[in-house]
Image (cartoon, rainbow, N blue to C red; front, side):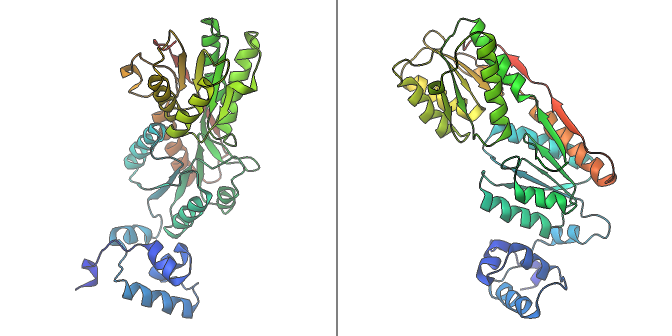
Length: 339
């Protein structure tokens, strides 16, 4: 069979595992890089032949362009989160307009997976990277930024290094939500947070505390639960809140998946919204108005985050010496019937 017709499900990762090397090393062998030890090269080439593996020829052609690969890397923490899907849509629209293709990887807040995908980005010679780091001190991303790769952070920023970023005013958004609940008369307002080490989670908690203070409502540690930003976390932590001796009369949920989990628990328990408990979510999704009752939620401009990030990245690629910039986009409280 001609080599150009050979394409199966054996991927770079499989070759790398069998050879006991990194994905980046396999990619260098495929691209005839002189930096690989001859014995290692021979071993990898034999494994490639044994596994009948052939890399995607279109991607290889893009990599081998002299001036630019016309490839942008996008590394997101949760492909199941509709927020990141909207961010990705904004990135893709701008990338397509400028004739860039995308390599999209989902690292699921897993630092091991993140490292693997960052190695992949290096091996694919992407022109630039858009990422939401695991934390503001994400050393793997910081190291890549220091290597000179054009980069834009979305949703979360880095400390100790200047990179372009596109964020939202999480603290103000959370403040608007909790202030609204307080002014509606709720006094036991709980907060279900995402992962605490993520800057956006911490900023939303600060906004929550600010609003309680300004409305003369005492902060109670028992009413704050820390999760992992996923649906299952919302289910479990909402149940813990409802099982308290003095349960909350309102819940502020830290993202859209947590909100859905909390709503599942509330409905399973047969509680009426908003008569018995109120709910406000952070992230206003297209389905928010279709819920029963329609959900009051903080809207953040996810599509524009992606659009601005891609524009910043392409600008950085074209003008690598320009000063870094941080864009902070506004949020908006969408008031409906859940409180």
